[in-house]
Structure formats: structure tokens, C-alpha cells
Length: 305
Ligand SMILES: O=C(COP(=O)(O)O)NO
Ligand code: NA
Ligand SMILES: [Zn+2]
Image (tube, rainbow, N blue to C red; front, side):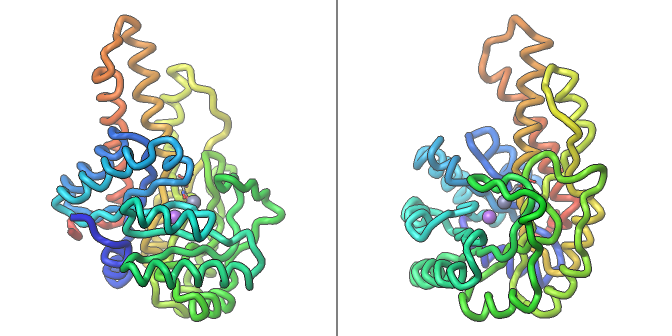
């Protein structure tokens, strides 16, 4: 069933498990996310960035909404990294049941102002809101925030921010970053910071940049002609620990991008005569489903629906 972000994340925080919020850009990615969640009796969030909305529009949103409405587990459709009040309201009009307003690149006061506007409008329409305080490293969609400017979330500021905005859940910068290159070997995750914020805030916390970038997928990517550097993601145990301390929503995009590309490249390489789209996208859907299954297991949401 299609529900709001709060319907999924408030129980997740209380139950000390994480809920995967996976980015989608087409039907097969959406099916891999929702059908795997159903099979594992897990709540799940499907998210679209502004780029995905530009690419697939209402067509793509309707695929997600239809699968979510018919799903036997709770599913929310979430706007990822909404960059403005207008963008958030447009998404709500499109049928999104959760919206992020990411004003984290503004000064504190502007972030509060922009976020509060969205919260008032979204709440008037029964939609829940994610905001962000602190800046991740890596490439945050339209913003390249390099390491030196990235700053982690200040716990006391986070309390003020939540009080003054009314945001339902909060994305915090705790060492993760977007993309496939999160750090050499094992990215540093500031567990002390998470645990400080956990004690001060009772709302669900959000971890962006939570792809694991599994070595096996990276190797398969290379083996079928993909070019990728020294790619590392967040370690499963770091993610598991974070979900025990307030992290309830966990954003994953890169892992599904790599998985789909591996599926397609392997077919094109090993079956050069193949040109049936179902035989090309079908195996890619399988590779993605396995990645979703692994992630739901790491997050502890299996059987929670
Ligand atoms: O935070 C993310 C995705 O992060 P990854 O690049 O680690 O999948 N989307 O908002
Ligand atoms: Na988001
Ligand atoms: Zn993100």
C-alpha cells in the first residue's frame, strides 16, 4: 500500500531497524525494489531525484505509485534532494507521499526558512518532509562539495533546526558521501556523532550516501568492460550500527546503478546476438533484486511489514 514517509520511518526508528530508500529511473529498477520488499515482507521507500523526474516525469511516478498501491507491504514515494519549495510542491502534486527539501548548502537561517515553508505546505496536505543539516562530501547531485567544505552535522544545531522547522526526519552528515568513491577502503563513519544526535532527537534520522559498492559488483563491472576506479562504499557493519542509533532511512542509488549496468553489460558482452529488450533488462532486474535483498538484510527491515 502507498503510505507516507512517516508511516514507515516512525516505526523504523522505534523498532531500531533501517528502511532502504532506493532511487529509481525506470520500470525494472522500481520492480526490483518493490517486488523484493514484498517477497521479504519489508517496508521500503522508492525515491526519485529531480533528475529522475526530468527523465521519466509523471510516467515514471505513475509506475511507482501503481506498484506501491498494489504492493502488499508499505511503500512511500519520496522526492530525493528537492532543491526548492516549488520542486517539493510539484512532487506532491505528482503524487509523492514524502518530500526532501535539501537547503543544506544555504546558511543555517536560510535552511530553516526554506525548510519551514515546505513543512507547512506539505503538512497541510498530509505529506511528510525530510530536511538536511550538514554537508556530505562527494557529488551531491547538483552540488560538488569537496572534502574540505564538507562539514558534519552539529548535534546542538540539529536540535534547534528540528524545533524551528518541524521537519519529520533529518538527513545528517556523519561521514558518508554520494557516489562510488566514498573513501579509501572503509569510509569513516562518525558513530559518536550519530549517537549524540540520537540522544537529542527522537525523529527518524536519514543517512545519505549509503551504497555499499560491493567489491563483487565492482569486479563484475570491470570484467564486462566497465571502467571504474578505486570504488568503496559504506561497510555493512557501519550501516548496521547506525540503524541501532536512530538512522531509520538509508539512501541507496549507486549500488542499483552499478547492478543494472553490470546486468546489461554482461548480456551484451556474452550474448552478442541478443537484441530482445526483455533478455537484456530482465537479467539486469535480477542483479538489482539481489542487491536490494542484501541491503534489506543489512538494515534489519526483513519481516517488519
Ligand atoms: O544519498 C543518496 C544515494 O547515495 P549513494 O550514491 O551512496 O547510493 N541519494 O540521495
Ligand atoms: Na532524500
Ligand atoms: Zn543523497
